[in-house]
Amino acid sequence: MTSSGHPPRVVVLIPCHDEEITIAKVIGDFRASLPAAAVYVFDNNSSDGTAKVASVANAHVRHVGLQGKGNVLRRMFADIDADIYVLVDGDDTYDATSASRMVDLLVSKSLDMVVGVRASTEASAYRRGHAYGNRLLTGFLSWLFGRNCTDILSGYRVFSRRFAKSFPVLSSGFEIETELTVHALELSLPTGEVVTPYKERPAGSASKLNTYGDGLRILLTMLRLFSTERPFAFYGAISVLLASVSVLLAIPIVETYMQTGLVPRFPTAILSTGLMLLAGLSFFSGLILSTVTQGRRELKSLFYLQQPAPAGRE
Image (cartoon, rainbow, N blue to C red):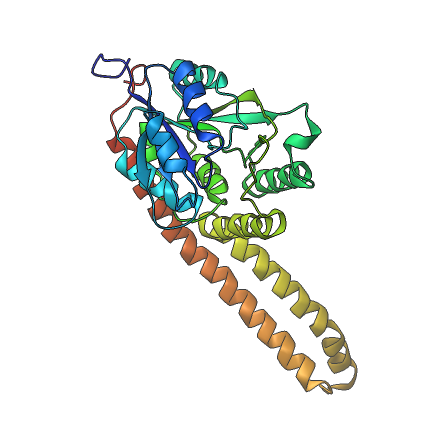
C-alpha cells in the first residue's frame, strides 16, 4: 500500500531495439507475472516491427529518437509516473516469474532498488567472455566504492519512485547499469538482490552489446564516476603517485648536491620540481572538488526526500 492507502502503481518498462521476435512473449510473460502492472515499451529506433508487435500485444508504446539505453531510461523515468518501476530488457533472456518476488522484496523491506542477479546453467546464455568480464567489472566497482555488488550489469531491476525521480541519467548507452548502481551506493540507498534464471537468447535474436567496445565504455564510466563521486580519493591517489616519482627522481640529484655542491642534471631537476607542483595541484583539486561533490550529493538527497514515502517508511 502507498502512503495514501491505495495499492502501489506498478509499471513494467521495456527498452527495445529490433526485438520483433521476442517482444510479444516478454509482454505476455510480465503481464502474467504482474497482472495489475501497466506495460510500457520504449522503442529506440527499431528497424523492424517491434513497435507494431508491442502495440498489437496491448502495451503502451513510446518512441525515443536518441539512440542508446541510457537515453531511453532518461525518458522512462521522466515520463512515467508510478510507485514501483520494473525495468527489463526486451530480449526474453530474463525470467518474468521473478518479477513478483522482486517487487515483494522491494515493498516488504522498504528498499529503493532490487537487482535481478543472473544465474544461468546454460553456457550459451552468455557470449564468450561476457561472464568473466561481468565478474571483473563488478569486482572492480566493488573495490573502488568499498561496497560488495554481485551483478552490476544486470538489466533486470526494480526501483522505488524515490529512486527513479532522484536519479540524474548522464550515460547514453549500456553503461547506464553502472550508473544506477553508483547512484544507490553514493546515497546509501537500501537495496536488495534476487537470484533469477538467465536464459539464452531465442534463435534469430542478436545481442546489441559490443564485448570490447562497451566493456571499455563501462570501465571508463566507472573511473569517471569514481573521479566525480570520490574526487579526493581519485586526485589524492594521482597526487601521491606524482609526488613519489618526483622524490625518486630528486634523490640522486640531492645526493650529488650534498657531495659536490653542484646540480649537474638540470632537466631531471626541473622535471622533479614540475611533478611535485602537479602533485600539489592534484591534491588541492581533489580537496576543492570534494566540496562540490558533497553539494551535489546533498542536492540529490533533497530530490530523493521530496518524493512521498511508501507505507512503512513514514
